[in-house]
Length: 170
Image (cartoon, rainbow, N blue to C red; front, side):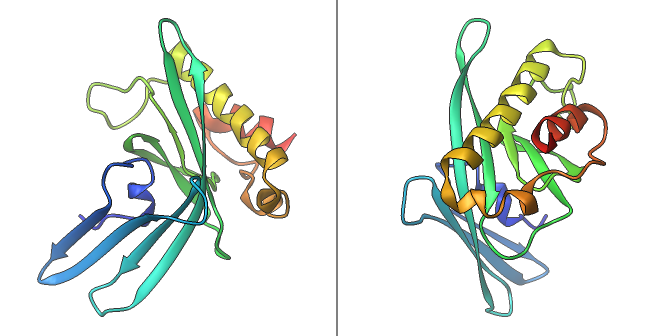
């Protein structure tokens, strides 16, 4: 197991994570940037090289059946963009091809916790809330307005996530 920098995004109480595989030690350090929503994750590799990953983390509370539920989008602020990003329910659930911003919500999961229940009405409402939050964040944060075209999902986002990609792209 080698943790990815984005794995710390939604584990806000964990400030550092160290892994050692075959005596090769690497670590991740989470810190707050210039504002509450600016998250910096510093990755130190076994060879001593250091890479910083910057994210703008945007969260809102969504009214659900009997309680509120936080939904979050983590916008990467660095130069590099990826061809896929993970979806989280605090911990990573799945890598979604074509998605470029990590997403987090209290999804209903399968028993094995390897996927979310795609037929769940709750999950569909959370997906819609994540799409609305993505669009709202881009309109409210100047730093995202210049990067939105790089960070929007591709048209080929598969399955359950296709409606989210369509909403953001239209």
